[in-house]
Structure formats: C-alpha cells, structure tokens
Length: 304
Image (cartoon, rainbow, N blue to C red; front, side, top):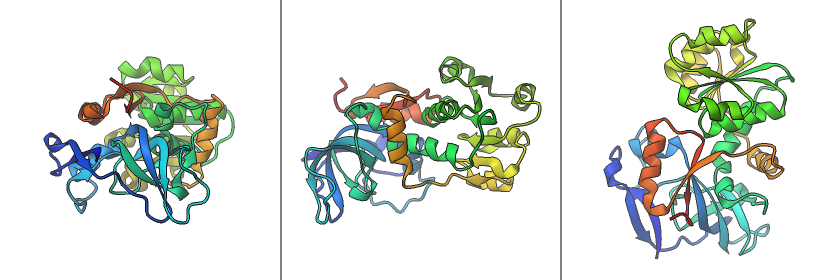
C-alpha cells in the first residue's frame, strides 16, 4: 500500500488526512513515480474549497506538482526508463502529496542533477507559470514590469526572470515580504492604501506590463498604470483582467523545460522557504491558504 493525502468533503479542511491506497500503476503513456518532493500551491486549497467545481470523486488526492524517481513505465513510453529522476505535473486524480503517483510522460522533464528534488518540485506549476507570465508579452530591457503579489513563489520567480532580462521590476507585496522581494533585485512597493500613487512615484510614465498574482481589488487599484491595457496579465483572476482590457495567463507546453534549464544554470532560485513532511501536509496547506506565504512551500519526503 501507498499513502496519499486527500480530502473527503469539499470546503472542509478538517476532513483532509492521509489514507492508504494501492501504489498507482501506469497506463499507456504514463510514468509511475516514487515522490521525493511535491510543491504546495493555492490551487490545492481552492480545489478542496469547491471554488473550481465539485465534480471530483471523493476522497480526492491533493497536490499538483512533483519531483521523484520513476518506478515503472506504461505502454508506449520510450523516452524514459525506470530509475530516472523526473519532475512534472501529476495525472489528474492521483495527487502529488503522496508516496507514489503518476505523471504523463509527455508532461515530464528529466531532473538535472544540479537541481534538488525540493527545488524541482516547484517547477511544473509555479516556476512554469512565472516563465509563461513573463514571456506572454515580450518587453525590451529597461521597460517596467509591475508584479502584484511579488512575495509568493510565482512572484519571486517572475521578479528574478525580469532581472535576467534586464527589465525594471517593481514588486508589490506586504511589508513583511520586503526583504525577500528586494533580494530578487526588484524595487519593493508596499501593498495597501494608495499603492497606485507609490507606483506612479517610481514610474511616472506608467508601466509596460502588469503581472497580477492577487486579483480582485488589488488588481483594479493598479490597472490604470499600464500604458497599454492589453499588457495586463492575471494568473489568478482572468475575468477581472478581461474587464479591464487585459488577459489571463496562457500556459505553454515548453515552459517547464525552459525554466528548468534557467534554474539548472543558477540564473534564478525557486525560493523554497519551508519544507514539511507528508504527515504534516495539512499544516503546509493551511499556511498557503492563509495567504501570507513568502516563497514556496514544499512537501519533502525526507523532512522530519
């Protein structure tokens, strides 16, 4: 048997717990993976809350991104072999907060030995999203990138990518995240009342791209600062972005491999700030759901 962390009732975090199941066996085109680390993301608690629909079979395994070792390959898989270290998004319904799970071969990337399992586990969802959101609209060196929600895992990665491309990066976050935002090379801007004025003071001619990782009113408050409304991208609130003339995040299949190479060569850091063992997955989820996370939180199978 193999353990997986699952929820049993929508919108009831008190029903989350470890359960036993047979180790998943790969179907055609799939890889069975012994999980070494799994990234924790806001989408995990949003799924449990029912905000993204309630058509999942219960109990529903949790977790979307993993890094681990291949233990079996399904029919038709030729590019991977047992024993390889890989990273990727999990096959829907199998969960990443688990001892064993499944990853589609087409979605997997070989983990470079230069990248730890904990860092690799942040790549399929968070780091790939940061890559896409900073490449969806191309900027020139020196142009101004404003990141709303710069202190989380995606925001910190997006800020570092902006630095690599020599953008002028402005990062909006809570005061508690000032140090970690400034460490990326971004100029920190405190969130809260009159944030638009603080941004305007630093960018009197407006900003060239807004990357939104918060949504709602926080997005509305700064939307008027972008010189071209179509250069507003929200990874979390595409409806509000569209209302304001912007767009939602467009995910691309090549982003995961590209950002893996960028991390491999040390150009950016996934900023893993906390590691939890599998039996404390609920605590990790609660920290992310609280909304005050700095950097990335990872379920680490070797953590005590």
